[in-house]
Image 1: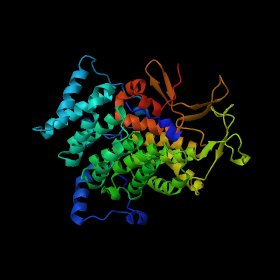
Image 2: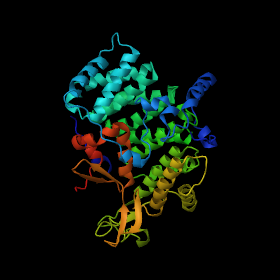
Image 3: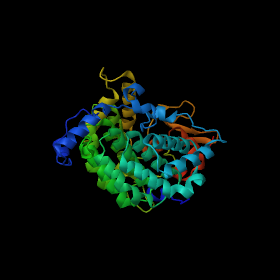
Image 4: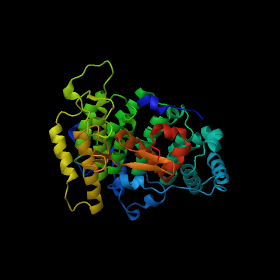
Length: 447
């Protein structure tokens, strides 16, 4: 297994397209655009809270969304009988690699089973000798796009293989095919899957910081154009995917100052989306940018006390390093706070009760972090009668019986969300055994 130290690298919108976005749209023939628009019409407004009946693909394993944060944290662990999965995995690998005389339906079944096993079990030893051949087979299915299911399962198989057995050469091999799928596919589900895969590939597949920034620029173009640069105009699920992967990749960058101005403009604009998933993903990126605008004060560094944000009542402050504001993420901060406050208290019958609650909870967190960037998601200002201190961040993930992971920073939440999208209920099992996953979120508090 190729070991990679990730800590070293970084530690259906209903809007019309803006004039700025229109200038960035890719040129397409009218027949191609109409075909893409018609094929995506039934895929829009695919909310994280949508039912299986609203999108027939949500129940067959092709969906990438992980609902709300609370639902993400409560996903059941996936387990398979230990005496059967190894044999089935080997059979599925052979079926995937040996494509001769295989049918589309047969490949769909083989890829689906492979994804199910690899998300539930850490199987690096079992797949390592076949990883290169598997990647080649996945790319054939992705490029052919014989069916939506086969293509999406191949994309998911590629991603779960990468996080199980990362190869530094994968990025160069798969980036162009994934980018081509994003721009050319007429299925918004396939486009969404390819966007998520591109983000995961850039993170784990051996890309340089410059290449990661290039992928972030591509994602930002999708966001600014409301999906049009990916041939998915006003597709909420596509824009949400681009927002989520931009945030995931941004956690690798030590300094976001150069990228923050243009990105903040795009994210603030998406707060006006009619799709709550787009709004939340944009808000979470705003919170991340604010969090990263403050860094630790160096031992030999002079500072302006007015920029010192250490709060004696914050849970991490006593005896901890002082944090200093390095740049201003957004010049119209008062306007931003007003928008965030409005979303945190939004009352409308256009959204379901569940969607309203999700918006309120998330934007209360996001607003708190914009006002106090040292405070992460689910931060509670209430004071404990026992300790006399604020409760602080209450978001945690239990790792079986061994301990509790505290998600007290937005960068942690972005990485957890990305890994949950890939591994679903198999996250905890991979976290305990997969060094690549542990290195992404290396902080565990033992019970």
